[in-house]
Length: 437
Image (cartoon, rainbow, N blue to C red):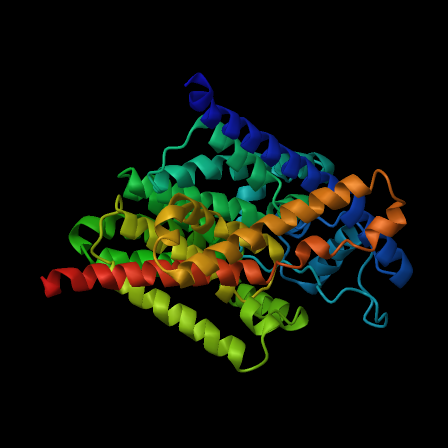
C-alpha cells in the first residue's frame, strides 16, 4: 500500500528531473551548437556581428529622443543603431549583408519604458533586461494557471517552469532580448487581473502591452466581442484601456510631433525589407496559406461570438482566450520563432483538458498525439545535440544545428487545429444541447 501511495510522488520527481534536464539541454544547445553555427556562418559569409540585441534599437531610439530630441525613425539614427547592433552600418553594395535594417519600428511611447536606462551603459541595460525577461517569463506560467483555474502540485509547476524556460522560442527570445517575451507576460498579467475582477488594471496593462500592437490586436478584438455580451458590466476594462492609450499617444505626440505617421511608415518599411509574411503563407504555397488563415480566423471569430456572454471565470472564456492567443501566432505578419511564446496558454489548457480531448473522438486523439510529439521534439533533440557536443567535435555537431527547429512551423498549426477541433465542437454541442431538450 505504501508503495502504491508513493508512486505519484516518484513520478512527479521524475517529471521535474526530466524537465530540468531538458531545460539545461536547451541552454547548452544554444550556447554550444546554435551560437557556434551562427559564428561560423557569419565568418564564412562576411556577415557583421555586433551586440545582436533586439533591445538595442529601442534603447538607442529612447536615448536620441529623450536626451537629444532627435527623431528615432530617421535614417541617421538607423545607421547609429546598425553600428552597434551589427558592428557597422549595413552596406547595400554587399549582397551578404542582412536585409533587416534594425530601424526603430516601434510605437514612440516605448521610449518611456526605457527612460530610466538612457543614462546607463548598454552592457548594464542588456544584462538587467535579460534577467527581467527571465523573471516575467517564469511568472507568466502561474499567472496563466490562475487564469485557467488549474491548481497543480508544486512539483508539476516546477516542471512547467523548467520546460518553459528551456523551450526553443523562449531561449531565442532571451538570447535576443526580444520585447515579445515582455508583451506575452503583460498579456498574462492583464488576463489574470481581469479574471480576478480588476478590469481597470487589466485595461491599463493591455494598453502598455501595445508596444507590439500586432501581437495584442487579436486579444483586444476578442475582449471587445466579449464586452458586447454584457456591456454595462464589462465596459470598464475598455474605458481604462482607451484612457491609457490616449495618455501614451498624447505624451508621445508632445515629445515627437506627428509620430504616428512615422511609425506606420517605419512598420511598412520593416515588412518590406524583411519580406515578412505570416507563418501559414511562409510554409504553404499561394493561395492556400491565405485561405487557411481566413479559415482559422473565421472559425475563431465564430467561437468567440458564440461565447461572448460567458463570464471571465468560466472554461468557455478561458479556452477562447487561449484559442485567440494561438491564432495570433498564425496570423501575425512576421514569422518569428520567439512569437511562439504566445502558445503557452493554449498548451497549458490542452494539458489540463488532455483526458477529455483524448476521449472525444479519433480525430482529437490523432491531433493530440501530433501536438505532443511536435512539442517534445525540440526539447529532446536539443538535449541530445548538447550532450553530443561534449563527446564529438563541435564542427560535426554544429552541422546539425537546425534539427530542433524541424517542428517549428508545425507546432502552432497543430495547436490551433486541436483547439478548434475540440473547443469548436464543444461550443456548438453545448449550444445545441438546450434546444434539443
